[in-house]
Length: 177
Image (cartoon, rainbow, N blue to C red; front, side, top):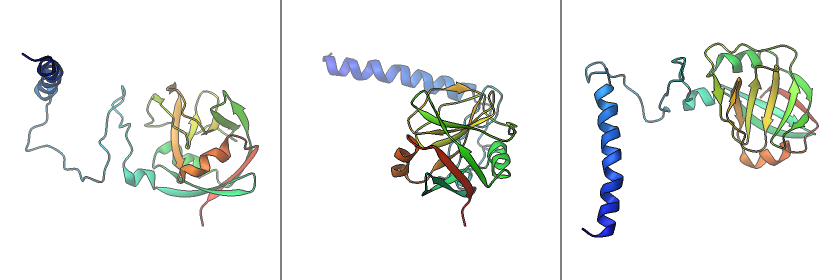
């Protein structure tokens, strides 16, 4: 058998075995399968059974505006309990400090609810997150590392605005008008 054919078979066999294992373990029957629309994300479950993937509706739950050193930047909060609790604090003006050349952080006036939040998040550049162990807000200007206790609450809507975060000293966050 040609070498490329062996490679193809070698890649297909584990994939087929995984597919069979997943479908064999499924408890959902065709009659009870939930309907989902193509515009929604595919929910995954965390170790606690809570969904960890946000739908497009959750990503646009609340529009906010950040003023970073005098420049307006738009962002969207998701529809998590933590994001709703954060929105209740607005408007806020916070002094920022750099943390690990990845994010700008600021203390919040109080800790936020983490009800239903995943145990850990893998932040991306442009994410706004709450770090529960310290009770602070993190604005990521670079991709971060998976962190237990980190809850992503939103993201900047324009990727071009991410670079503004790297040197930001102060931010005002308020509902978008």
